[in-house]
Image 1 (spheres, rainbow, N blue to C red):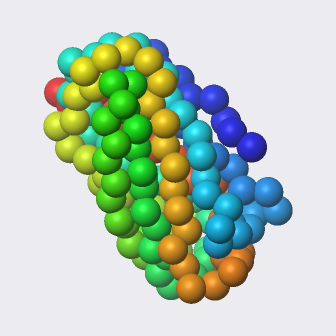
Image 2: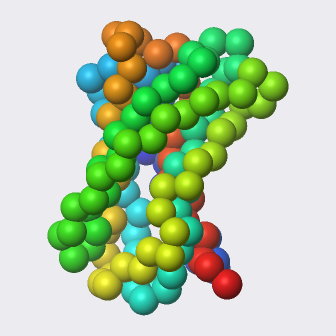
Length: 131
């Protein structure tokens, strides 16, 4: 299930929700964001919402981003869910500007050693305009 992103104002955000709060190892989260204003510098965050009672101590993921101009960038991230909170956010990119308007696609791979990662509610990308 994909939740639509918004591109008004200073923040663009888009999320993927996991069915039954379970992220299966080989089911990549795939979603996009519409880029309306190229040339603006963003700080990009990868955000994970989870059930603290079920989340693993660490969750490795790989983020593959395909920009509207066709450029592909990937990055490995290691989430460390906090048992006191239900959302963790890590910096994905800083000072990043898109060259063109259009669809920016994200594919996030679960790199866990387990077939299923329980307690995962949603994962997404938040892009905030740098001031």
